[in-house]
Image (cartoon, rainbow, N blue to C red; front, side):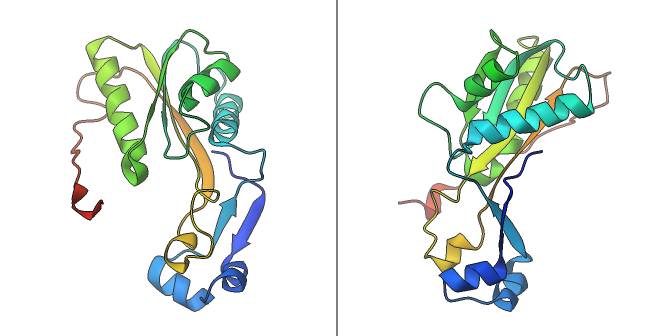
Length: 179
């Protein structure tokens, strides 16, 4: 994982919007969130999370030929954040794409990676969840500013023996709350 250094406590939030620590904790359980510095994008956090993974588990990226990044806050529309990360962590040439489905993005990315490994389209996959929501969310809106922070996490998936690993995924969407 990778987190920005800047901690934003509920007391800090109370200075920006009409709220209290008790109000936030009682409704969300959140006590603090992290906010990225101006030079910390989703790809920067995703790169850092991947580097931390590699340091903790040497050889983890060996054989990875697929990179999927779940993000609703990409660095740009193109190239994909996954491609930016892949290039910086030594996975040039790997297939790379982003998945943008908000809160469930990481589960969708895991499902896509699993499916590609099972079908033989990929040997091993690096799956990253990376968000820098602090720059997208209205920091004056108490209903959303208190919820969202910034950070990234990374995992590597590979084939496993029959009966092990993911057994199924249940995916779905409900657009009724949309415009």
